Length: 461
Picture 1 (cartoon, one colour):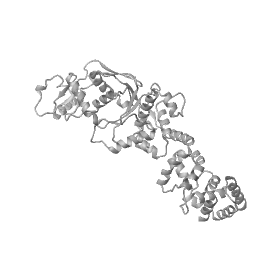
Picture 2 (cartoon, one colour):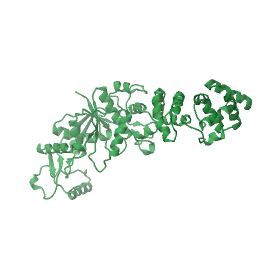
Picture 3 (cartoon, one colour):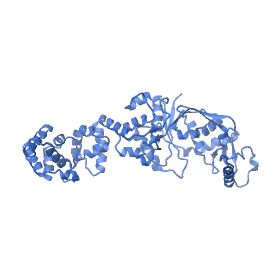
Picture 4 (cartoon, one colour):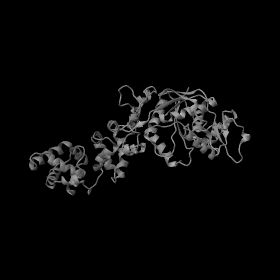
């Protein structure tokens, strides 16, 4: 048997972090078993459909490195196939036409509420002949749900879960306008595309019981269900806007690396002993359904930042340069060939201090600056012109700048002008060269900028 998993988001907005984790688990399980990972856009609700949202979902998966097999499939485009299955069920007497008017259904609900009963359709058309149908009423198609016994879901995470069949209603398969409902479309699409394992949030567990009614009625194979707990915020409440970023695109914009995000999402509800840092190659080798936790996981932003810092330190410098260039240019820095050369030379020091790509872009921006540039308020206060003038005179005597000779001349100026206090010289130099008070080693930075550029910046002040 070829393992086939899928991710099936609705195109109504950005890719939520929970959807991203579900996609990751599905992708890993398929890769672990040399199977297929499919992308289906559940777009039957055309009133909420957005092409931009479809693109955002695809972009989110691509950024995460979760490439799907084959073409992305539109559920809406298979609507005629869904209707065909509904008709098959009617022909097999496993579904039926219901001619209830909206007024009758509302009266049903009112009567149920008044008596304290569960608000369900009362099945009045389940065994009636279509010849009794009122004129001018377009019927819906309803499934004949089992009336006795239990429906059982053998879930890879939740275990054996049962529901009494008297709790299941004869839900609608086809609306009166002939369009299929989500419940029918999902089952038909999963069957037709050969999905063997369905991994999704445990908020879909109740849907599984209804979907299994259709599967059993059609005599199809039941996929392996894996309903995973939801992701909570740090306070234990459902992850929401008030906790911070929710969408994958936001984490990309905040400067997180996709490999760090994959590692973090993997550990958010799945474990492999005490391992915290797990490469994608290891994840593909190790991932299984048995190690998915049964309890909801809490999102820890500090842990994500720590992981991201680890992966930034491991990242190739040329790749980091490519990633930070658009960030720097977005904020007005011109990253020309000279700036790129400087950034590459200073990248090791920059990435050792960074938790995000934005940190690298912000701290490394001075390599791309050209005088005159704006000083921060703190930097402005550190611009000791006497010290900077003395530094300029000393630098002019050097043929070239190295990290060591810059440090030596700073010590000399400190001894001559600041009672040997190196900080009283290094801070003005940092302010003059970077426009800020925060940077990697200013001695290394000066050497990377070179004699001519350093003098230009000192004299600008």
